[in-house]
Length: 107
Length: 116
Image (tube, rainbow over all chains, first blue to last red; front, side, top):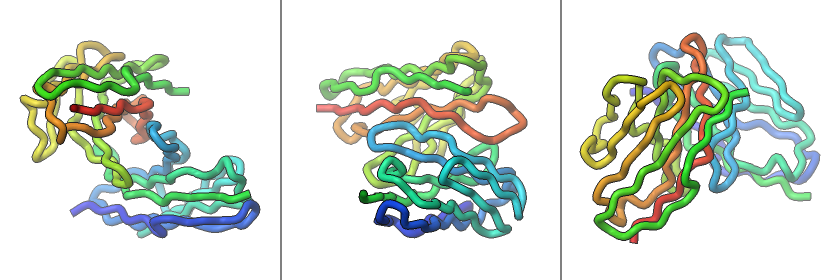
């Protein structure tokens, strides 16, 4: 059964305190690994797509990396506005979503 | 960019009534749209896949007669919750695929349905 597991479930950081979020997956026929940001009461906002092990993508303070079994979302020197739930999804025709990591960055 | 608009953002209705939610891709044509349901602090659960001009494909356990999906054009899909009951209260989110060669989905803002 296709499965995506994210950890930790919740993470509290001080502003400027870098950390990483984990996404492990077991998906047959993986064509892509996707990261999204979701703010409360809103739909997910697309961040990154990773297609092959070793691939990395960056956007501002976020960097996503991919291995054969997991992906990491690295957050460097986070700011309070980075507070959100970060979702990971895997697959292609149908995406399987993890339950997300709720990130809270305190000033 | 890829903008998906969903309407209404929130709706309150009485038990037994039907509610329609619209999903539009504003700056691209979407051959495939997806409807998700999300409960508090839970992941997105795929309800159905909607293809333009054909019948929607529903996930196991989703009642097709309760959740009617129509994909009338390349930019519009609708979800109608028929004879809504309190247990149908949830956050419904649509998404659209911009191209067939990449997998990323672009999501609408979501619709919060409360059935009294």
